Amino acid sequence: MLPKKAVIPVAGLGTRFLPATKVIPKEMLTVVDRPTIQYIVEEVVTSGIKEVVLVTASGKSAIEDHFDYSFELETFLAQKGKLDLLNEVRQISRLIEVVSVRQKRPLGLGHAVQVTKQVVGNEPFVVCLGDDLVEADIPCVKQMLNVYEKYQETVIAVQEVPEEEISRYGIVEGEKLEDGIFKVSRIIEKPAPGTTKSRLAVIGRYILRPEIYDCLERTLPGVGGEIQLTDALDTIRKERALYAYKFRGKRFDAGDKFGFLQAIIHYGLRHPQLGGPFKEYLKDIVKGLE
Ligand code: UTP
Image (cartoon, rainbow, N blue to C red; front, side, top):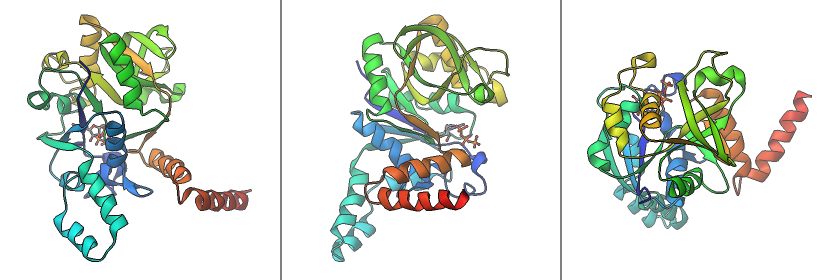
């Protein structure tokens, strides 16, 4: 059975992006012309998944509203004859069926996944972090579903990072099975420099199996006092199997100020209408810097 649901945790406090995120959820910050969360939902939808479980918290209702039907706005646009905009707005609410689950306290990513147990039930599911953007010809989630179809075990997306960045990520070590696919032998959350030779960093895309819920229940708070998904994945590795997949595409940490700036440049250059003029504008800026 292939996953039918995607869990998107958006209950974190977004402290790396303060003060912007004091009131506005970081997942609603706009990259070019849509909030980051919409890129993720579009990735999920184009991968063939239509049911989304949002893990939310207080102050995050703008995200639910964004994917909801807006009677007032749609009536206004229809009356004004602004049909292109109306279509665009309608598309958003038609993309997916959304169910929200509340995470009452931000006790970590592992805990955010744990609270979806009743809604997801006894089936495999996708997890996409609400602030990780991945631009790819074949959507990253779709690439991972292909790997899951073959191995039928937990799959996590990884990318290579420079040595000086390993302490910001979960890092995996493992045996290469085929191009881009590894059987994980070790997974370490935010390792200290020099403690691993691997540069394979876990990013915000996972395909989990229902066994993860039992593992999370047995997981004690780890790094930062939070229930770490990485620790539960390590239990999965020991008790079943864990595969890492080096996806094809480019990933941006849009929850980080510098990553967010990179995402704006990247998506701006690829925008169908704005891309051309934006490129010329950037060229002028670069010339001015020389
Ligand atoms: P992050 O660690 O990037 O999010 O978690 P954060 O805690 O909001 O950000 P900083 O570090 O304070 O800036 C990755 C994803 O997991 C969600 C976040 O919303 C984000 O999309 N998350 C994290 C939860 O849903 N609950 C949590 O308890 C922690």
